[in-house]
Amino acid sequence: MSFIAGGLFAQSPIGDGGKQINVGTGFSTWGIPLYAGMDFGVHPDITVGFNVSYRSYNHRWSADDYRLSVLGFFANGNYHFNTLLDIPQEWDLYAGLSLGFVSVSSPSAYKGGTVSGLGLDLQIGGRYYWNDRWGVNLEFGGGNAASGARIGLSYIL
Image 1 (spheres, rainbow, N blue to C red):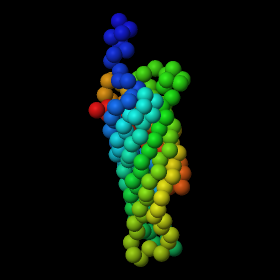
Image 2 (image 1 turned 90 degrees about the vertical axis):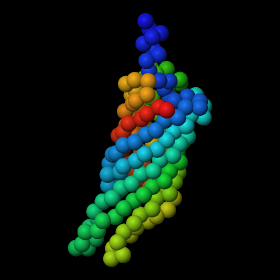
Image 3 (image 1 turned 30 degrees about the vertical axis):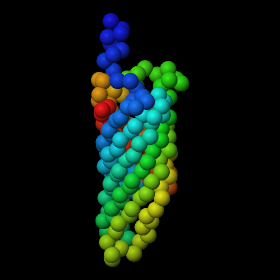
Image 4 (image 1 turned 180 degrees about the horizontal axis):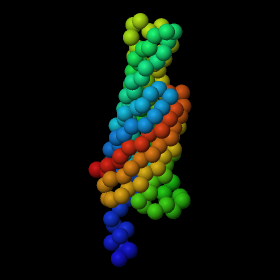
């Protein structure tokens, strides 16, 4: 029976050669982000991937409110602690680094500072897989691009 129950959950993390899609929302220093990304298993305990995020928020400058938009493109690498810490396979605990580009757009009348450029962030997160394909993800991170948290869904391909 334990062999059958163990087979109900996906290998966690996704493992060497595995692929996973992640989508969700969260909160950050620059508004409420929407994000989507993909992870690729390159080692039993290491994934690399990418994500795209979009945030739009109101910013008050002088007496006026302006709508700013932030678009981020990031590559990431994560180490998954499941093997090292002997974590049950329906759970996934990871930490890593993201490097990318952040583009900030503002109306031409806005005179406040907007900075587009390279972003370097650290993240720590976890997932719980409720079956062999689907999981819920919670991630905290911060760096020079933004700070905040994400919550979303993960789907193993």
